[in-house]
Length: 387
Image (cartoon, rainbow, N blue to C red; front, side, top):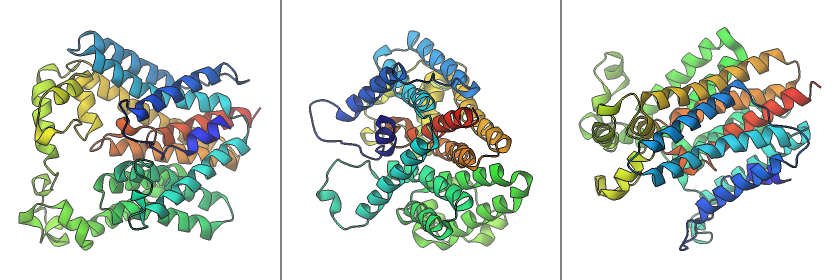
């Protein structure tokens, strides 16, 4: 019951104005309950290779605290990255049958559906201020729910229902013109097709890439947001002829900010970074770019804090989860396991892709909890359904 409740309510932020950060308290409280829960459940957590690699990453973050100018910020960063691991381990131990996993997944989809409905009701947010995460976090959360819906489309008889759900959770990122989640959704679909069809997925991959290019140049709101003022009239022909480059892409000054922060904290410390929490310490103690406190890129933060070592280890975690899910999918004849394996493997790459230009770690209850939760349930089902 605790797992179903926790997994399915990640979209609820409860960000009410109080003297303390209620979201941070909730995050810590869930971590403590998961840790306590591990001592109560009958099964032990499953330590797969990606999760062991995650431990190495956390150890590197702790080492980074030792040479950080602000260990207090470093500890906060360590705790934020610890959450997905504990969440995943608890899922791998607590889920002992398909019904529990399926109930958690479907309940999460019910909650996500309700959020979509509420978001499209004018001024509804005034009635529930602070209850839901903001749009960017929601859109990244929807990547995993969309992936689940695609999996259920292929492995259940409810084709029409799950097709509607897939479209429902794909549309918001386009309607809200959130380029990061559009990219993440596309990567998730590509990853899904690779797991599902292997080499035969090439036409699907080409189709997704082509659809992405067409969307950029045919959806007015997306095109306007994508390019700088000088290139708002750019066409697909300009793209084909190689007349467009990253210099023509409007990054909302993010590229300038990333270059500035990397010059301050990364360029002279490329291997190990400036220490865990260094970037957050710098942004909180210096007024830059209008007072922003986050870099809008988890990858930039990792590079500045923990260098290329930290970045490569973290990327290896996501890739190894995808590979492990791929292996589980093709080694099992049980469609129940396949549903969760393909959902976890595809959604982890989709969500990891959004870390390029967003701060997923800051709201991991709504974002990272989904692919890591699905992966934990995949580990549990793969072990216990075959016993």
